[in-house]
Every structure is written in structure tokens, then in C-alpha cells.
Length: 324
Image 1 (cartoon, rainbow, N blue to C red):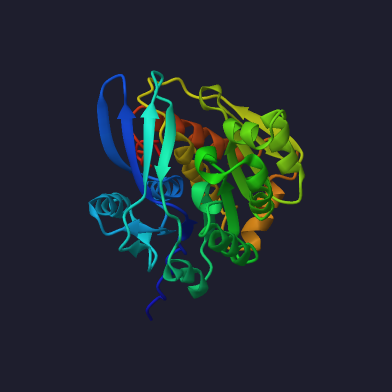
Image 2: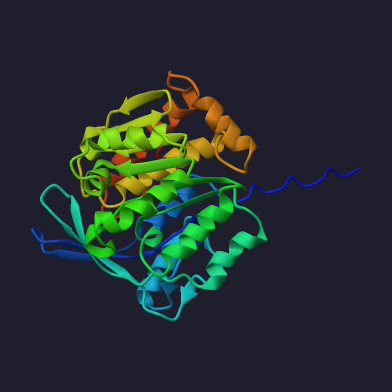
């Protein structure tokens, strides 16, 4: 008698932009082209941490697109059908200051092909993650919101606003869309810069706590760069220090944080196909003490972000580099 094959785990699905980061270090006079895009970076990080993952995106068949596709493929990220187009690959010019922090200017089109989003209809993913430009930039943002709404009754969802004010409009223009995505998500990660811009005059910590106290996410994490991070759930919170490292640049650090956070939660079974995983997440965040699964996830996320800061561009760590 032969045993039945063990089914492969359903892949996570990340929806959003993949592009080329053009890194400009004015002090050193260096210009480099490196694969990037916040959602693509999260998919890359999940792949390097051993998770099956697909990316629904838009990338060209040009030389820059080829570099992006190879970069993702080498870490196990599969593109959904329709993600590769005949249009030029989008770019983000990241200008680094003396501390390695980046400011961005963009040349981007976000309009995912129908085939890229149709992958959802073949069956719900283990988990859906989205955010950044793709979640708010027309015309593709409506497709992203539709994907979130379709997935939420079927699997868990995470969201990182990762806002780009110079590209995507005013806080007043975006606030309703961001809050709609937050309310539809189980886990939200945001930076203090995101919330300071989105809610002028409001302490970012209070804004994050308000999201956690609302009807949406079970977990909200606010990152503050070298100041570390803080997590909120409905009845508690926890601060996470940032490891001290020599910083090459900060490009992709927040995305590495997100992918490592999701990796632990996926591995623990508190993210995944609804409703069982969502129920476990809600149960884990029901008390006022830090749940062990969150402690492990936040620790790994902080270490992943710190390690990414030690090397140029969005280059998240592998499981081996994190000692997993």
C-alpha cells in the first residue's frame, strides 16, 4: 500500500510593484541599478526565508526587467501569469544622504495585467500581502483593493502603507483608501514617517494604537528605524529595540522587517487559510501579555531589518543568515 503524497503548502501571494532602484550616493559619486519595489522586496524576503511565494506585479521585458525577474527567481519567487509586459520597467531613484537614508523620485506605471490578478481565482493563497505604491496609485490600486476584499473571507491579509507622498497625492486624498485597507487586514506594519504624514499633528504611536483598537487588524507594528519598533494588539503592546549595526543604507529595511515578521507568523500557523489561522491569531492576541509567537516574530523582524541595513540596496537575509 502506497501512502498519499503530502500536498505542498499553498504559496503566499504578494501583490504590488516590482521596479529598479537607481541608487545615487552623491557623496561617493556612485550610481547603481538594483532590483526593488516594496512588495517585491517582501516577496523576495519570504522566498529567502523558505516560503513558497508568488508575486502579482508588472515588470517589463527590457534589460532592467530581466534583472528584476532573475533576482526574484533566484530566491524562489514566482511571477503570476501576465506580470511580464512589453512596457518599460518602472524605476525609483533613491538618493542617499550621509547616514545612508534614502529619498525617492519615481518613474512608474502601475496597471497590473488581468492575468496577474486572475491567479487569485484559481484558489485562495496561504496569505495575501500588499502595500506601498500599488495599493494607492491609479489605475491599478482598485485591482489591489479588489484582491484584498476577495481574499479576506478566505485567507489572512497583511498591509504595509509605505507611503510615497511625492508620487501618490496628499494625505487627505489617500487617508480613506489606507484606512479601508487597514480595516480589511489582519496584520499591519507601518513606519512612524507614514503615520506622521498621514495624520498631521497626531503622535504616530497613538495613530497605530487606534488602528489596533479598531475593527480591523489583530496586530499593528510601528517601525522607527534606529529607534526600534513597537507592536500593538487590542489589549497590549511591546517595544522592540533595533540592533546596532554599521549602516550601508536603509533601502529595503522595512520590507525585510515585514517579510521576517510574516515568516514567523506563517510558520506558527497564525497566518494562513481562514478561518482557523485567523482564529489562532485572534486567540494569540487576546491577552495583555506578549504572546510567545509575537515575541519571536518581532525579534526576527528587527534582526532582519538590521542585517539588510548593512549592505547596499534591498537585500533581505536568508534563513541561514538569521540562524533559522
